[in-house]
Length: 404
Ligand code: ACO
Image (cartoon, rainbow, N blue to C red; front, side):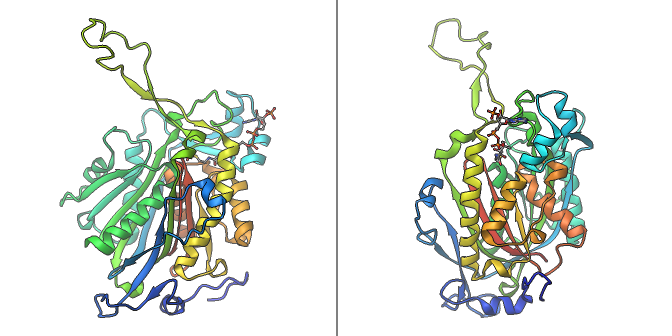
């Protein structure tokens, strides 16, 4: 299908045939369900953000993996809190203006969880919508992956979502913590569970309430974040129909100093430990600090590493930037979206952006934007999307996938 922009969206079967054997899929001794042997290259490296910048090839540690089964995205859903907070509202509590926030970030509004609402309830609402679109019964879910850095239980929220959805077979349910890259990592994890683990229906949720970890007196961070949940159903299919064409994942603990919400001891908690029996025991109760961020460094990291990652994922998929229909990045800052799109030569009309309404919703931002785009008819079945997540950790990565 040719688009006015000149973008080319191949029909599903021909896409697989176009992939050059040396990069994407090639025949080998491994057999798929239909006796057609298939392998794909994916990529996960240990290179840090600085090393990547120094020119090391992202293809160096590419690892070949067997794909005997495919996976595809068959449903999505999202939910946001009811309270909307505008830039003007923020200007009443910190020294800022609507103009400054809009120009520097593209954000105009964000949604914030109020006392009575819960992140789990948002995640359940988004999941129900995704299951409904996918026409998958909760009893047929095999795995629930809750991607979040703000669970409402320290031990994870996924089992509570499993319970609320009424999944009678008690599917495996657990959390993935990787901040704004969480959903992307959940998506690739779902594919791995399907391709290699015999799972059929995986519910991947991205949900975060960073408003609970924001210092609302810090104008450098509080203007950025909002709360939301989004979900997709990833389903097993024949390898020929596989909708995850390539991916590329990274992390760099050295960059944590630029973005974190580290654990801190409660200095006032000295009621215990005063009997002198064991020095430093029992430990003081700890809690997480508010988000600490060096915005300039995070910005530089994103505009440097994200395009490289997408280019690697495209290479692994045997595709080029001109063959994608949509660029869907973690919704952090419109200037980051613009810079990455320019570098990849993707025209603005192919860049999905909804951050003006929601701000940075961390792990929820990609599935929320995807859901809005699918429901508005922008993203259609068979469209190819380059998706990229990036954020705290530092973690970042990309996936080239097909919707539907
Ligand atoms: N209103 C008005 N002025 C402000 C505000 C504000 N809200 N915030 C900062 N300023 C001031 C600063 O004090 C500074 O003033 P000075 O020049 O007198 O010192 C000036 O504006 C410039 O500040 P910078 O921090 O240099 O502004 P910058 O253009 O870098 O924009 C921003 C800041 C928006 C935070 C940007 O750096 C950014 O978006 N970075 C990326 C953040 C991000 O994407 N995080 C994603 C990961 S989140 C996760 O994973 C959890």
